[in-house]
Structure formats: C-alpha cells, structure tokens
Length: 184
Image 1: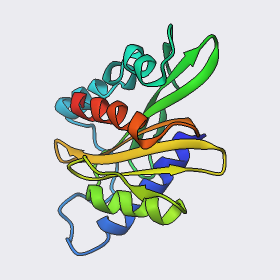
Image 2: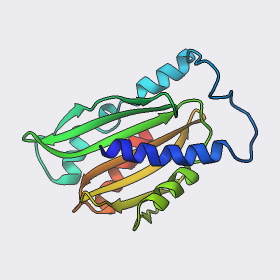
Image 3: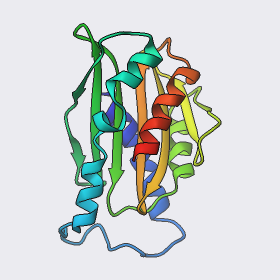
Image 4: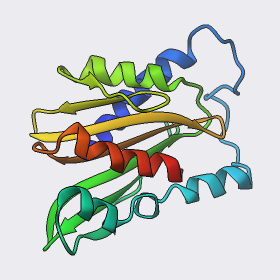
C-alpha cells in the first residue's frame, strides 16, 4: 500500500542519517525495547490522522460532498521504529484519498533528509514551497498523487503525506497536508 512505500523510503533516510555524523545520542536499536514514556504515548495517540484532517477539509479540497473519514490499519514496524497511522477518505464507498502519519520513535533524522530520500526514490518528485521543513509532490506509477512533508514533533521525526487521485494538483494537496501538520 502507498503508506508502506512512503514509510520505507523515509526509513531509508532515517537509517542513513542515524548512522552518520552524530555518534550515539540515542540508545542503540539493538538494545531490548524499553517502554515509551507516557508523554511519547500521548504524542503518538494525538497523531490520529482522522482527527488531524477531518473529512470536511478533504471534501472542500476535492469539491465532494458527504466524504467519510475511516481509520486505516495501523502499520507499525519494530525494525525501524515507524508507527504509521492512516485515515482513508471515502465518497459513496469509493476511495477518495488517504492521509498517513508515520512517527519514527527513537530515531534521529532531519526532515530535509527524509524528503531528499523520497525525491531520490520517486522520479519526477518536485519540491513544493510554503512548508517550513520542505515538502515534495509526485505522481507515481500507480497513478496517484502524493504530497509529503516531514517535521520534528517533540524531537521525533514525523512524516505526513496525503495520497489521492493523480488529477490532484499540489495546490489542492497543500492545504490538506498543512492542516495535518499544524494539528500535529
């Protein structure tokens, strides 16, 4: 699924930057997993994509009435620390797009490096102005349009992306991703 592909690309960036110039600010990932502090659990819970981007905002961007927001499956990856949550937007039972939010608990990474990894993996991806930490837009081989941005939330790298029909322009996607980032 699209969420997994974007999360894997972002993980590659985090792996590359976490093995780079800053030695061991974070504990080794080979250590036994430790329970997360309650503030981290609260932060992860607060990144419910359906709450970050209500169906009404997507309805407005897509010019569709009666969109329904449905929580997508959780896609956690213990190997890279990625905790992906998604919200699927449906119109008359048909997919109208999805917002995915992936937190990389215990990882260090810079938003610019995460976005650079996406650009490298997605031919034709282009930068989108208006985001403090940058954003990229691309239309992939599955004929879907994606706008992805990354930020640090309480020191944790977070990737936010909206994927919709290929006809969606960056101008339509920008307000959706900005709203989700502002709410995170």
